[in-house]
Image (cartoon, rainbow, N blue to C red; front, side, top):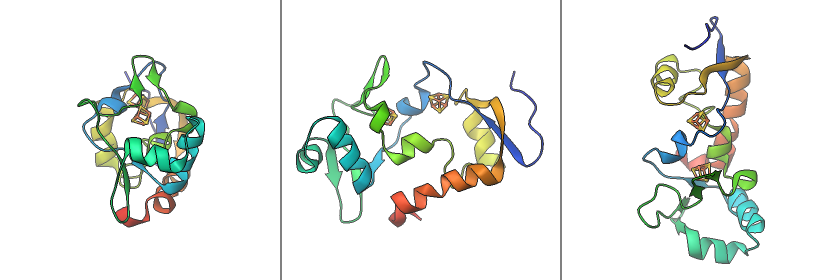
Length: 141
Ligand code: SF4
Ligand code: SF4
C-alpha cells in the first residue's frame, strides 16, 4: 500500500530488481551526448555505436529494436548500460507530462511500483529534473 502523499509532493523510489519500465512498449531515445556516453561505456566509437544500435532520423536517435525485444540493453539482471543509460531512462518517471500531471502520474503508478514509495519530493524539484529532457530531446517538445 503506497504511503500517503501530501498536496504538492510526489513519492518515488525505484525498486531494486524491477525492470517494468524497460519492458514497456515504446522507444528508447538517445541524445547525441547520451550516445557518446554509452558508446564510450561500451568501448565503441560513436559511429560504430550508431551503426550497430541506432535508427537515426534527421533530428532523433532511436534505439533499434533487435530480436523483438523492447531494449537490447535489457538483461535478466537489469540494464547492462546502467551507468551510461540515456537521459529518458535516467530521469524516469520525472518526465515532462508525467511529474506534475496528477492523472498521468497516477496512471503510471498502476505499473511502476516505485511511485508512491520512498521519500517525499517536491513537485517543483521533480519538474526541475524533468526539464533536462527538454535539453536532451528538444524536438520532442
Ligand atoms: S518501473 Fe518504476 S520502480 Fe520499476 S525500474 Fe522502472 S522506475 Fe524503477
Ligand atoms: S537502456 Fe537500460 S534503462 Fe533504458 S530501457 Fe534499456 S535496459 Fe532499460
